Image (cartoon, rainbow, N blue to C red):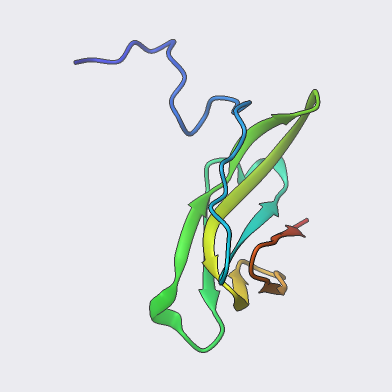
Length: 105
């Protein structure tokens, strides 16, 4: 089934729905805010000392309280320290049951 050209794709449309984060006993989450020019890019997140455990998420345009934000969401991360795999990016500690926020600017 062909998609029409005017139909926005999942990656490029504006996302207004709430992000469901499955956090709990030993699981947390990360929201990585970025510059608009990273829209659509995938950014990897690597547990410190465990490259095999890398995960990635795409930067999506999101409308939050009427403001446009660009963010990648990592909804289910084991608690621990991670490195954001982007130039100049910090490492981040994910706490169980909490959502960490990092601004990559």
